[in-house]
Length: 283
Figure 1 (cartoon, rainbow, N blue to C red):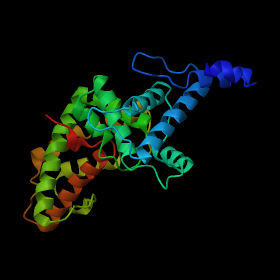
Figure 2: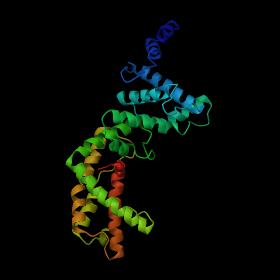
Figure 3: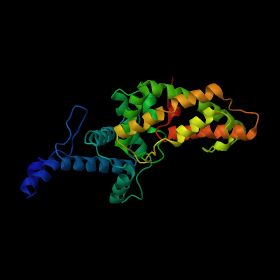
Figure 4: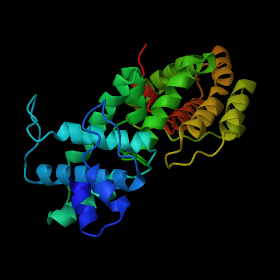
């Protein structure tokens, strides 16, 4: 009926159809609005509802969700993913909060939507630890970019299914374990820097060169194919890391050499953490 009244009020067909379809999708089997205008109106309506209800404390609790806010969040996610809309959530939620007269959006709302994304990706068949690694801890560039996070999860799943991905993760775990133990003893986080003049073995030089040669990674979210290319470039670290651990004792008697090697491992950690939180992977 919304479309009927809009047409009778002199609005264009595009506006009328957008109003008529603003409630879609109502569930996983319901279609998205057929037009770009309809998707925009549907997103605005759902975001407005979420910000408004969270703003007055009417949040879902346990199994109780009388205002269907989980469904609204899943609808937002479906529209963003299926229409491939790159839209940072936080500025949009802040704008909606201002329109409601709130000082800010409820801080629990963005994590609530991210959790619905986690559920959606799991339902799509992605492993729970892959989803956790892709979504990270909810901080850093792109943490509120729903499409970017979903693309990262898809790319990571493809990468880990290959030999380079699986082998690299094994090397990552060894590097991360050594760093964690040494940082705990030293009560400091090692800087991701290493001085080539202090290298003793060729494998140190080779690993350092492989790290320096990695392509620059845009901190902003990229699409799945671009992210997969970045991850595949990381796969080139697999052999240098394996050779490093086969030939080198990290805890050298010389403190300067030991510190330098730990810095090299910290460079490995930094390079990989730019792509995903590999610490969340299991197995």
